[in-house]
Length: 171
Image (cartoon, rainbow, N blue to C red; front, side, top):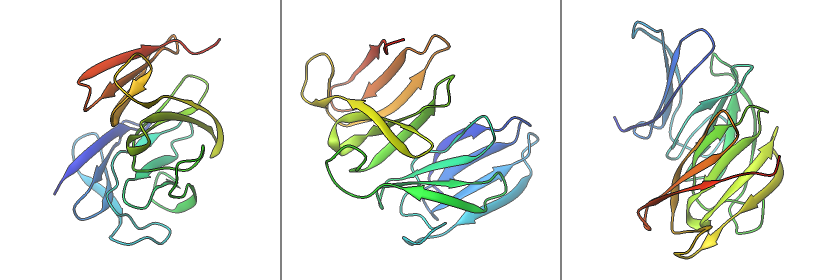
């Protein structure tokens, strides 16, 4: 086991991404395994290092697949719904998508680790992004984690630069 990401649905169930054996697991609030899905591969519903897991307001399960450079979306029981992303450096393309989070408007924010940036999506459609490689303000060296507070401020943990940066999106 190599548990990596965790989130809760609206009913209190716990979802965990497990990089080895490349699965997502759903547990009840008392710790009973309800279901798991995935397995190694690059087809729909398969994973190559599911790095994180996040649920939207409709309890859809989003999984950034670090090794295949895509985001996969499932219903709360693990049925595959859709995916987006491909390897690359262009906006909407990824190089090791790591951690995802939703803001209050259900915009998905994602750390694109090896492209040294943060990208935003609405239902899989690229909206915008920021950041590039470096050590100064607004620059990253492998951003790995992200959180968004109730005011919409974005916090990014930058692995190699050993810092956390806070951003104030336009409102």
